[in-house]
Image (tube, rainbow, N blue to C red; front, side, top):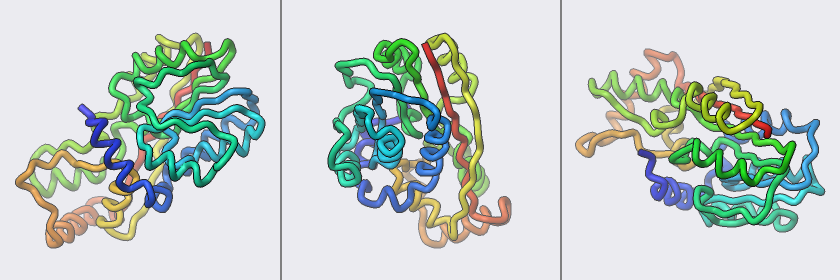
Length: 254
């Protein structure tokens, strides 16, 4: 099970570095904005806003909209406020226990909800806070994310390795939940890749964007020599230090 307290600690610890490494998060935010550009919303809630990358884009696209942005990490909220000192209402809160006081025309989230413990309960909760004809539109990482890293670790250590993304929801589950909760829904799946100069840079990117922990047991440590050997194996199998991100875009209406 995903340790949400550890997620909160990690996001808070590295919040000041997040934007430097959030390439895929920014890319997905742009993809979402592209799909929303022909819509119009008076009220919006951005769940898991992080440092406000997506929130800022929403505010640019819908300058007159009332936007509420929430995130579990107070440090992330502080970074987000630097981008938007006015015009957005921020709240440092766990979205699973947060109690909205109003309804929204758009309930949205960019690659954040993979950390939610029970998406069925979560979607049903926020559906109640969606205005008639409102839109629920979120993106999230899937279990295929970082598959190259997992394969490399398993081949090197000769044992089954569980990385954090293994616990993320798959497409079939998301489709069943969306169909159950919304009158009309669609789940689209895309794969994006990012190249890194070294394995160390890939691990640094994972660290600074809040996700860490590869399920290695305590007797395994990543020494400098092991990192070099792992990188050699990684390049043998995949030619480059390339990380794949499986991303689901889920859209539903009442």
